[in-house]
Length: 508
Ligand SMILES: [Fe+2]
Image (cartoon, rainbow, N blue to C red):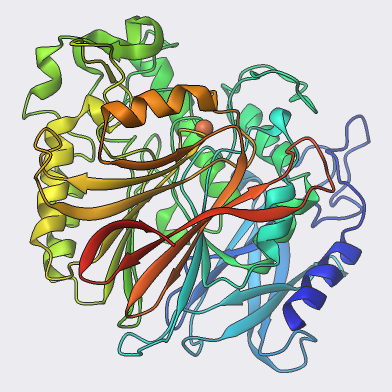
């Protein structure tokens, strides 16, 4: 009940649908400087990151004078028992975004926070620290969300997620889309492809104009990684399928990475440097779970067999695909992941990453076909990652992904070609918040061809809900009724259990 009243209160505080103001004279601060919302993220046992971005009049994206912002963290929703407070400076060169690394907090408990700028108060947000490293929490809950093309539906899934009881939201990519696409659009970007820093900033501002998205940010700490559309579709390191020259593309990537950092609850230590932002990260939730967030975009090898020039990027008979030199994470991140897995000591390992990890042969008859942009374009890198998972002293690994705009449950194997190969980890892909996926009718033949795929659900939107205890993980596919209906409800489409010590999804 407490949670529900908090979420309802949040709606009252930001009741009007906020839209970017156009054509007004420039003022130091907009009438509602917190119109882009507030957020928290990167929950550690004693720290969280608080975020906001001030709307500084019409030209929030332009250089303007710095604005001083007060912040406070309290033990109660009424903000009476303040335990930490301070000042931050919102600078025009970072789009007047504010990133506060708050330390000195107590582990495993909720906190509430608020910003004040120019005499105006933000709504109160709620966050939650991770349990202490040696704690043994009874239960942990995470949502897995991705892919929120603004034009293809309303963010009702976020409103329902705001009301869930979560330790954190795991967002695994496609927070914005750089272009317009899809059918039966409910609203428009009203602008073309994002290329410049201003373009990307305005796209984030547009997406955050949705009150349900702001409510989900204000209700839970978020742990974020990205996929391709935060920059451009199907890019691989410094190669973009739509921008033939490397240096202009790296300038686009630098603008996109900067805007991503400016709009996410990421720490100051992750501030980008040109086209580089170290995003991969490690978390621990007491003795129950460790979490690895992965970046499979920034360092990956280029497409095999020049797939960026092929329609649909399908690889058939491409020997280069199997080159052991190909990488998805880059050498440094790969070594970091392997050593983290080797040292893992909690009950569960969670790996939050971009896309479907299981092999998915999409061919016909004798002819095998693999999608170049996913893990199937990098099978030797996938094998090394799964070798590291198999070698971990923690036998219980869940791989959580997005990108494919549908829900999946799969058994991950070191050798997908061998039907007798043991399952070393269990994979769940958590659908899409709004983005349109493949027709559901395409999935049964794919399942028949790929027996390690345990479930595949399309034509619905929503998110995954992961509940962990020492004995088992329960993963629910939470789906909304209609992405085009602002009043739509949510339900559990289906649910799976993974028993500790026994990798693989069982219907539950
Ligand atoms: Fe997507």
